[in-house]
Length: 168
Image 1 (cartoon, rainbow, N blue to C red):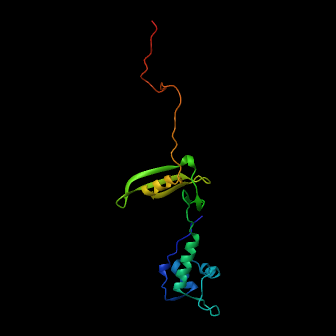
Image 2 (image 1 turned 60 degrees about the vertical axis):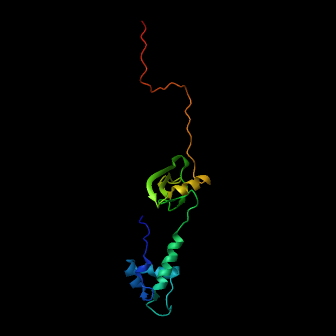
Image 3 (image 1 turned 90 degrees about the vertical axis):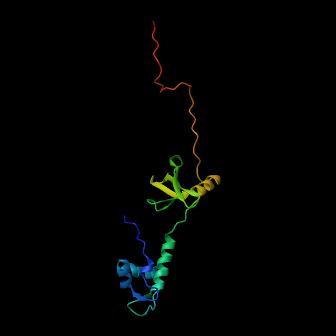
């Protein structure tokens, strides 16, 4: 499935009038797509005259509103899953935080927060800073690393320095 294209509203001049065919040509779309925009709320100058004319500023506003509707704000601790196309939490067992050496401005470092989607197991990644990471951990948004304790005897089973004792 092909992803949705971003249409650049700046390709349309604000004070010009355009037909649906001209708008379709500018954005390399089919004319019927632009006609469907009229049903979605694109304003035409006059409904009684054909071909329909649209002011460029109205096309720009329509495209901005259309893009704004598609946005899905993330809550704290969420990633955007590209496969599910929606905000998702990561599986807590497969959560990683990588602090890089790259600088963000003068004071902060880049942090990569990686996880796996709970629903579809797709890799997820968030770009952040070490300052925001500290805030997220302090507020309890991000899971903290698990401390693993190994229980057992003090002797290591991987010790290869053990000498054989000869009976004799």
